[in-house]
Length: 126
Length: 384
Image 1 (tube, each protein chain N blue to C red):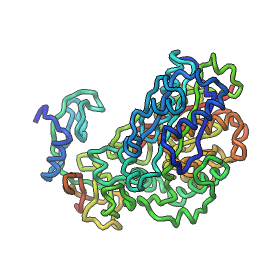
Image 2: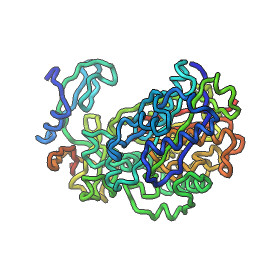
Image 3: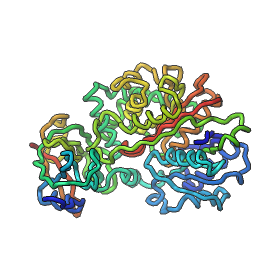
Image 4: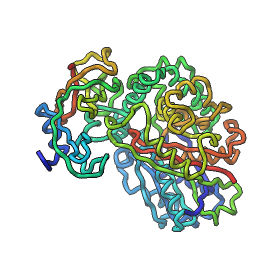
């Protein structure tokens, strides 16, 4: 798995297929969300592609009630920062979780969310 | 680096305008030229800030346009975009141009026009200041970004929605005395608390408005500024960046870029938070003011909410914050905000702020935050 490049396009193609992909620095062990050319911790370019399990807990969240164009028909919807079990965090749309049950620390699991041609990271019940 | 001074400031009325961003900037710039009492032909360069012109006005290349409408069509211009910190970033580059000895008189500022587009379009254009791959597709908005910060601050420190509401009440109280402010009306705690949620836990009255407006300042080298008795010196200016991704912030309850920008600006100025008499900081949302008062070193992390509740940030309090009314009451034309904050601090340090004057202010600070907390600039100003 050495020296593959996880572009945004590839990351989201993997998301559509139900998989989350991280990158780990061979020099210092830093785990990061792609794409990154250099490791922000040690400055090296030495990435291994690593699968992420997709389980984590809510670090913070919000319920959006005034939406941008393109999302106005979806309100209210929740967006959360989720800390994955491997340590890195991802932002995603919350799905299939009652909005009034959201709280920091809530266990959640990655779900791909595809709306038309748009793919995003989602998190649903663990 | 050579010393740099602000010798003139100009700000349009903030609110709804039927004029383009470039026109609004030109009006503010003319006022700044009059205020500086200089021949406009002495201006050697323009650093111009605007954010959404491409989307909302179908207008790029706005630097030369602004110079043309001002009547200085041949000066070199540079347009800068750093989300809501745009014209503070432009200011830093203008300071460096004079500091480096390239120019002696530089015009800097910015403008924004957004109220002519529907709210959902404006919300979308502002969201372009967050990441397009991971964040925008989720429907994250700017209130949403600060709601994530607010929730983290509440969970970590016990900050309450009522403490946040006190920030809005205080800034509206200050803004009553600012003739340029968009909303010159006091509001009650109950009004804030009963307003509808925009992005939980932030309510409508926790949020600054969409605003049209322009702001300009004229900077000069020591050689030129020496002849200006109302000159205000730039003591330090520092920019800091943090990761674009909300998910990568080390601590959602703090703004790391504010802390680093402040440290750099204080070091340049040889001052600390205890030396500051008056502050204009980036209260795009009430929680943003609370976190900024902590990041700038006025209060310990986690105590900014209590400070707002106790009135320590009001004019007459321990450290007067946003005597102009802040973004909340004065309004937030995002390309103009950084320059407008500087104009207010210069006005305060000159002792010309009228009923909103912070008495005896000698040292002032401006803090401007861009977008998802990825850009922050802090500058310090003083009188001789």
